[in-house]
Length: 107
Image (tube, rainbow, N blue to C red; front, side, top):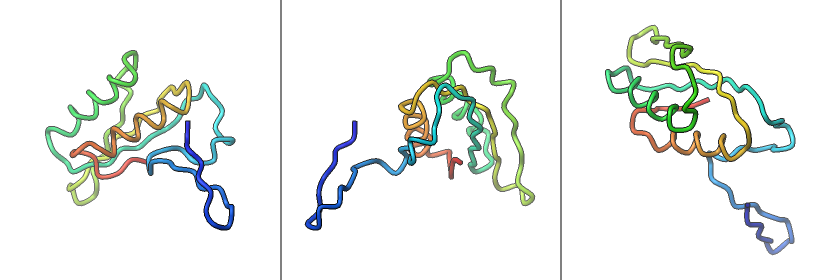
C-alpha cells in the first residue's frame, strides 16, 4: 500500500520507489510481460540473472532466455517473457534488478 501525503496546495503526493510500476490501471493481471535486462558482459552476469529470475519465478524455463551481445561486445542483453500474477511481483523483480551490481538497466 502506498502512503499519500498532501502538499500545501492540497495535491496528493504518492510515495513510491523508482522501481514501482506507474499507471496501475493499464496493467491487467495475470499477464505475460516481456523484460530486457542489460549488464556488462561478464561470466557472472548470466548466473546472477538466472538466480534472480529463479527466486521470483521458480518454474521459469531459463532455456527460453535470449542473450544478445552488443555490437562493441561490452554489454549483454537478456530478454525474457515473465508470467506476472500481480503488481507486487513486478515491483519486487525490478527492485531486485536495480539492486544487482551486475545489472546496468532493466526495461
